[in-house]
Image (cartoon, rainbow, N blue to C red; front, top):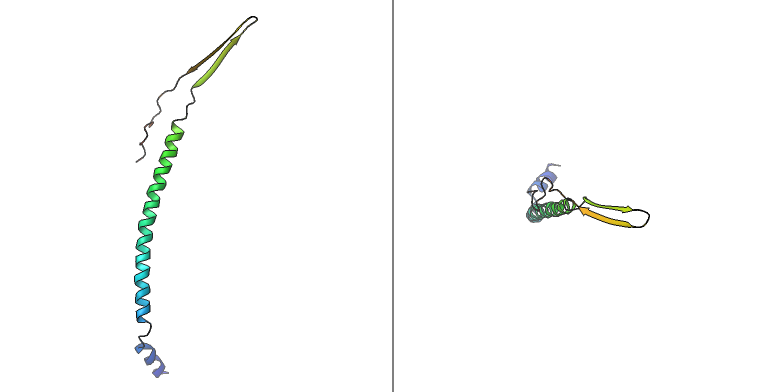
Amino acid sequence: MTRLLNALVRDEAGFIVSAELVLVASIAVLGLVVGLSEVSLNVNNELEDVGSAFASIDQGYCVEGLSGHKGKSKGSHFQDCQDFCAGQYDVQ
C-alpha cells in the first residue's frame, strides 16, 4: 500500500495538463469579466435610450370641438411642460 501511495505522489504525468488547464481557465475568466462589463455598459445605455423615449411621449394634446344646429367648430391645442430630468443624457 505504501508503494502505491509513493508511486502516486511521485507521478508527474498529469502535471502539465493541469497547469495548461489552469492557464486556459484564467484567460477564459478574464475574457468573461471584460465581456460582461461591456454587456453591462451597453445594456445601461440602451435602457437610458428607452427611458428618454418614454420621457418624450407627449400627453398634452387635446381636441375640443363645438357643434350646434347649423355649424360646428373643431379646435385643438397642444401644451407640454418640460419634465423634470427631461434631458437626453440624464442617467449617468
